[in-house]
Each structure stands twice: as structure tokens, then as C-alpha cells.
Image (cartoon, rainbow, N blue to C red):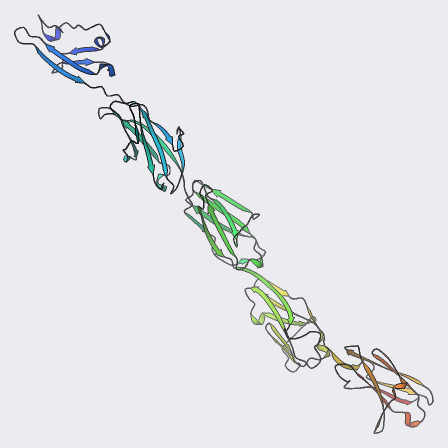
Length: 473
């Protein structure tokens, strides 16, 4: 700049004809002190600049300025722990597991500082790797927390406070464990054989949790379910048709995120399944049903399995189709789930059943057959008969009885006249099973009278004989 012969504003400017000279201009107007403007500075412009001022009648003055060029680093590049560049979203990272990311920058003068930030808070300022050509900062976060869901991290690289940092934001994908799981259907008794809905909700899992229903620890594989999912909430509705055998079992709703080993929660509930009675009749354990005989006492038990249990007066007893009422004089004593038969007789034999009722319904048991063994007695129509006879004519007097057991029945006959009772010789008697035939020939008036037929078996002797009154024809 040559201002001789004029003022600075009108001074002549000249420059060296090279790249630096073409990019420089000495400013004097409007600024104080005057300054040298260098456009498009580069690393090659770094060095000591000297300003020389010559006066007409004063000594020359020299001023030196050391120019240091700050070079910003390259745009940061993000890598995961496997060395793969992150171009979009980083992750996924698992809740409570560690997070590792690397931020690489190239160049920069002076050596840049590479840092990690989250929401304006400094996370890591230490660079693990540094050379003249690149700088790396490894971010290590122990135990990723839920607070990082949908968050961004920022890598900043800066060589000097004179220039703004270069930055790179990276979005995080975080997988979360289920936080809660609950069977939301109010606890209430279920009815066997009826389809009912059970609802379970789980919250907090990313991606949404898978819901599995289990019965006593076994998955309900074929049970119909409907599932509704949102970002981190899952609702499952189970159409459950319980059976009577499910009463007291444990149903569980399990929420699990398949990305976590053991990352599951369960809510369990003990089932209360109401069902109609199942009933069964049996003889008291110490009674052999094949050896019950007249005069014995018998206890029948009605086994009832039901929920809720029937009231004692809700159990009834049947002999065949006849409802049994309490009758002490007849020895019939029903008492809830017990039926006592005292001093049973032949007529006590037959089928016995019981019935029970609760709010779910009424059930009648299958029958148990009670066999009553008894000593012989006259068959109907043979208790007492009147037979006309002619002297010297042989009669076949037929005696027929019933008995249990039928095998081993033995017969004997007696003849009654006036006050005398005489046995009839067995040679005149023919027996076949429960029938005995006496060949009888009245010879005189004294042979008219009453014949008595007696039978016996292993239970005992007939108490009342079958009577045949022989009269003159």
C-alpha cells in the first residue's frame, strides 16, 4: 500500500502475483487499526506475517503476527461393537445389557476432541484411539436403562473453540423386558363345560411381549385366543372351557420377550371350577356283597364329588325307582351320604342308587345291586293248598320254594294229624332243585290230614312250612 502524496483512503494497492497475493487485501478504510484480510485461508497460509510501515521522517516500524490455521475434523462416523458402520438406527440394545458405540473422525488441526452427549449432558470425553490421521472415542454404557427408549446420542468433534463442533446424531433402538403382567378378569368361580373369557394384559415390553397361557405349567396350545398389540402393551383374551378336573388347578398368563433369555413374567391364579355332582354308590368296605343275608345290617355310601358340595339334605336315596324316606320301624335310615339298612329282609334286595344336587345341576348315580341271601320260603301259591284225594289213589304233592343260595337246598316232609306229627320217609320224595314232590296214598280215614313241606339251605331252615291239606274227595 503506497500512500505517498495522498491519504490512506486513496492509496494505491499492489500485491505479489501468486495465490496468496490474490487472496489478500489491506483494509484501511472504516477500521482501526488497519488490517490485512486473507480470503479462503488454508493450511498453506499458516506462518508469521510481517507488517512493515515506512515513514517520511520517522524510522520504519515492523509488526509480526503468527497465523495458526484451525482445520475442523471430518464428519463423525459411528460404528457398533462388531465394527459395522451405523448408518441409521443403532442397536437393538437390550435392557440391563451393556451398550458400546465408536465415534471415528478423520483429520483436524489441532488434534480434535471427540465427545459423546445425551440431551446436552456430557457422557464421555476421553478418546481411546488417536493418531495424526484419526481420532476415536469408544462409548461404554453399563446396563442400558429404559430411559434410553426412543432417545438419540450425539458425537461431537472439535479442534478449537474458534470453530463450531461437527456433530452426528444416532438414534437408539432399545428392547425392553415386560414390566408387568396381570390377569385382569375378576376372580370368580367358572362353570364346567361353559366357555368363558379370561383376559391378561402386559405392559413395558419392546417389541410387544408374546403372551402364553398355561394350565398347571403346561401351555394351552389349541385354546382359542385373540391378541391386541400396541407399542409396548399386549392384551390377550383366552376362550377357556374348563372341565371338572380343572378345579384347583393353576392357570398362568406368561409374558415374554423372545430377545431376552429368561426375560418373562407370570401372573397365576388358582381355578375355582363349579361343576355338577358326580356320584357313586358302594357298600361299606368291610361288607362282602356276596355274603349279605337276612337280618344283617348294611351301610351304603354315596361318594359325591362336586363344587360346591351339596348340602346334606340335597342327597337322596332310591331303591329301584322308589325314593327312600326315613323309616326307623322298617330299618331304612337315610342320612345324607349314608344309607343304613337294619335287619334287612329278602325284599331289601335290588338296585340302590343315590342322587345329589348343587347349583350346577343334579346327578343320579348308577345302581349297585344288593343281593340278600335268605333261608327257603314257600313260593307264591304254595304257602297253603287244599287237595282232594280218594282212598288208595296215589297223589303227587308238589312243594316249590324260593331260596338264596339256590344250591344245596334240602327238603323234608311231615304229616300232621290231630296232635301227632310224623316224618314222611324220604323214599317217597323226589327232589329237583327248588321243587320237591311227595308221592302220597291215603289208605284210610286217618291218612287225611296236613302235610308240611320244609326246606333248608346254608342260611337256615325254613321258618314257616308249606302246608298241604289232604281232604276226602
